[in-house]
Figure 1 (cartoon, chains in turn brown, purple):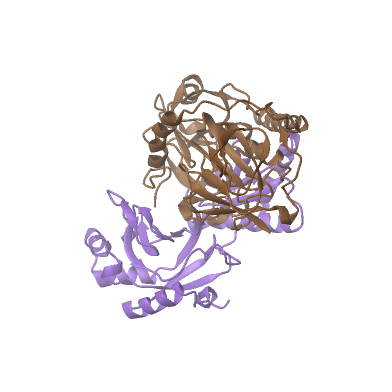
Figure 2 (cartoon, one colour):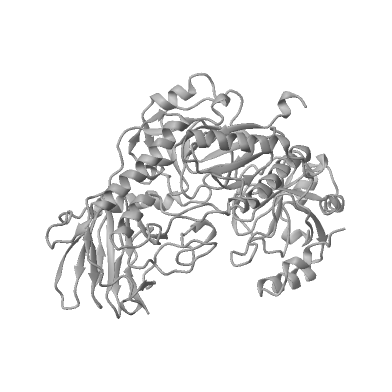
Length: 357
Length: 250
């Protein structure tokens, strides 16, 4: 039997995501999925879930959830904390980076995400129906997740309950926060770097860039110097991937992200390597970033190293000791609220991410 | 074969490579795209595509999504893709031919009259040109199931609208340049709306979610407004088998 979590306060733009929807690019369906799959994997691992089980992606502030009839085991990963509100009126902090059990009637009020992006995993996974092999939400075509949209008040999330013999009753685990290596974002130049005026690639690699306000899961707009083309920004549209840095005619680069459209008709000056794609998810409007060029061999080594770093993190999980977790963070809800409008604007469909037909 | 005809392979980051057959949007270049895609399908069926996850056919290029363990494996896989691309015979079509209902009545075609005027054509003449042009599906993109089709006759060639619409009605038939498309859902769009089809282009629950695929051929079966409404209601109720619109193989 499934246990149920009821959404009493949905928070802004919280989405069900798993490892993404593979195999349908040729018919125009983006991969989507967790913007930082390693962090989702952390939350899942704390519960003994498979790393790619569906959880909640929380870009700004988590929801408030209430366990209905049965206890449910949960885990948070990211720079955030939560409060537990018992039916008898008592409340207390709940830290991230450890698994815990929410009792029937108890509410979990997840706080603002202080930096980057955060995930909530549910023991046994979030039981929404899979669409095209994935539970990931792709809002533009209303695919997956909860009818293809963000969480709403009154939504009920089905979780593997006690009677299913799965999830609840597992030893509670805690781990250190998993953080990505800092430093410039690594890119491989091309494939159309030769379509740019001399010096454009050097400008991309040399300049500090700022994340624009109208950025979202489809793409990050960069503010900085303009990159000049040799003879026009347009090419015959071709398949693109998250990480590709498209430069439209105005010379302002756009880094494609997890919800990137499957094809694009702008020249691409460089492509962020896969190991650094999760870091894109942690950028917020106004953040500064830089790029550095690497070879494919270096990119593939970085990807292998990342998998090793995660395995090392997972190997160091230990049983939870009450009061031993990271302390509950202070509430910076005003900061989070200020960021909400940027995200909402970013969902405006009319943005020219792509040659709009 | 001259140098320009040789397929070129360029990495798109460490998770994809683009195999390019030219720059032109035309049937000849696309036939090479399609030939390569068929070669990929065959190789995959025989388990000979280690490190390849999926691929995206486009006008003149195929983007192949890869997952290589290291640079040596990547180079081997590059060589395999290039060999397939070089040896693949062009394929004119996917072998599927559609006969899709379309209504070009004025109230479903808000840009028809302006387009006729801009091109110096009579309305009837424009409708006949639209209805009579067989189309090839170059690729799907922009949204799930959204087909880019061509080529329209030069007489119909037109730039995009000066200012895009915020909301194009679902299943609008639209033209720009020498291309034709169908919007699967309500979405923003900058192409000229010249008609509408009752055909549902994407159904995530179907065995084959997208109605069309790269290389399909399509002709319009012109219907009047009553017939459009009837078919639209049937399609909305899920009472049309999309395969009914496939022409039997000749």
